[in-house]
Amino acid sequence: MFTAAFWRSTGERAVRTAAQATIGAIGADQLGLLDVDWGQAASVGGLAAVLAVLTAVATSGGTEGPGLTETVSDRR
Image: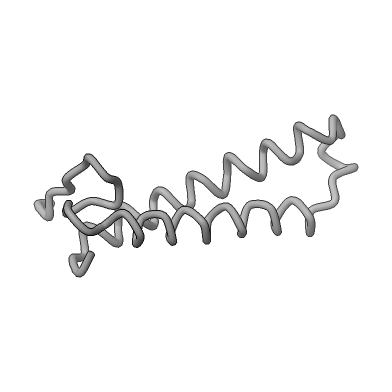
């Protein structure tokens, strides 16, 4: 949890999760792009991102990566 690779992977996961949740919220309302309540959609995405980060931190005990079974290499 104290490596740059962990936080890069966690950040990527949080952004990806936020995008998926926002798109899901837009699709669930069955609205057009101009009819979307963007504040609410961003709120759903933000909450999902926060939960992704908290999940990564909570499961970081035994591995180098943000998930229970993954290892992130610090090589770039």
